[in-house]
Amino acid sequence: MTTQKKLYRKRFKIVLVPLGEMDYGLVNRLATHLVSIFNTGVDILQGMKIPSESYNMIRGQYYSTVILNKLELLRSSSRERILGVLYEDLYVPSAGFVYGDADFEGKVAVLSLNRLKQQSLDIFDDEKLFLRRTIKEAVHQLGHLLGLKHCLNPKCVMHFTNSLLEADCKSEKLCDNCKRKIELRS
Ligand SMILES: [Zn+2]
Image 1 (cartoon, protein in one colour):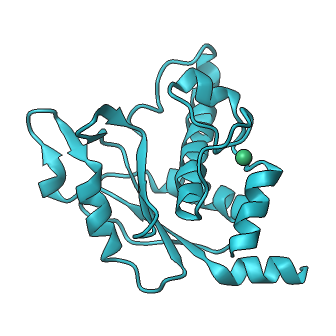
Image 2 (tube, rainbow, N blue to C red):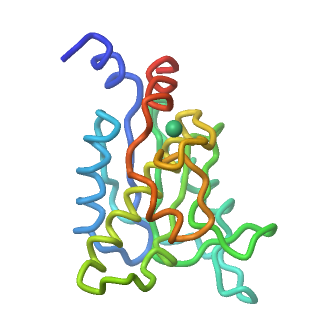
């Protein structure tokens, strides 16, 4: 391992928090991919209930900011970057829904899988496609926690996408530029 990689590994650790009913097989597969993409350790915490106060009965959705505030309480060191994962739909008051949300200062993010499981052209690849989308959205949110903004490179995972169709066109990896920015900061 190069010195740079050693440094990279020391600087931050990813902590996954399954929220509510969650498929642990999926969370494990996600963790494996995150280890190789970020070259760092990934812990999976025991599941947590979705905070009931985050539920908006009128919208039938969960307010992401309230969940982020709860997740922040779980952080035990400044090295940790926490990502909560849930099946339920998320919103912020300014948008109909969000795939995920990140708080750079609090070093916490949350990801909803609710809208990632939509129709694909090839139904036989559905599960694979769902996992790939999950990985992409998770890497994207974690990228924000590492200080990355949206990237202009359409293949980069930090590229802003507004639909699943667009998201399916980008890769689950960081482009060299974004990777370098994380390394410089770490
Ligand atoms: Zn990029």
